[in-house]
Structures are given as C-alpha cells and as structure tokens.
Image 1 (tube, rainbow, N blue to C red):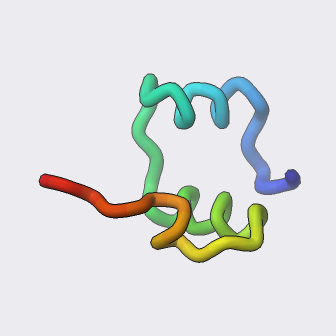
Image 2: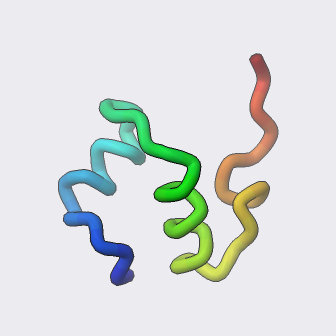
Length: 45
C-alpha cells in the first residue's frame, strides 16, 4: 500500500497511539478500496 506513510506510522494509527487527519484516513480507505464509512465504522461519541 503506497500512501506516503511509513509502516511504523500506520501501526501507530492502528493501535491508537497517534491521531491522524481525516485526509490521511480517507487516503488509507482509498488504498484499501473501501469507503471511509467502512473503515471507520460507527462512531459513538
């Protein structure tokens, strides 16, 4: 997956150790060929 982020940063996003911009999250969703809603799921505030 080529999104301009290194593996360590993606790992930190996955584990919740860093926050990421909505733009970066949407780029990840696009690279995975899924919608942003599918990637994020239902958010409960």
